[in-house]
Length: 101
Image (cartoon, rainbow, N blue to C red; front, side, top):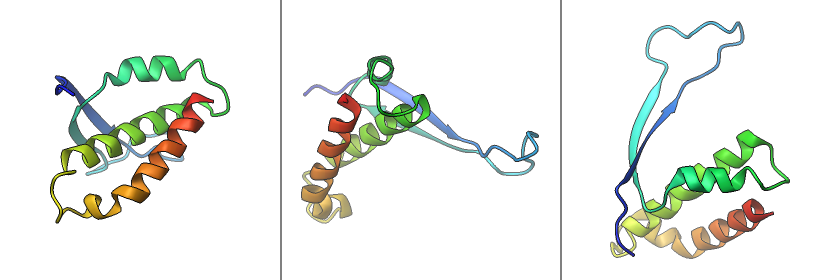
């Protein structure tokens, strides 16, 4: 598989109970180079039932992050994800089945 040039910035920001923005350091951002076009995957996930929109988006992003990380380190026997690979494959296959409906 050729490496994709799709890069994403993931931002995690807590939602405060009072609706106001949090103060101080409350946002986490990371960049990720993805093997697939997440926007297409998210568009396809909108047509699936069984999960709410937020749940579908979270499942797509989480699955793709894990897939990409596992692939990136598949040839490194000392990497923690390599040892988890058989169980990770099972979990990712189950997530994929849920996403497909």
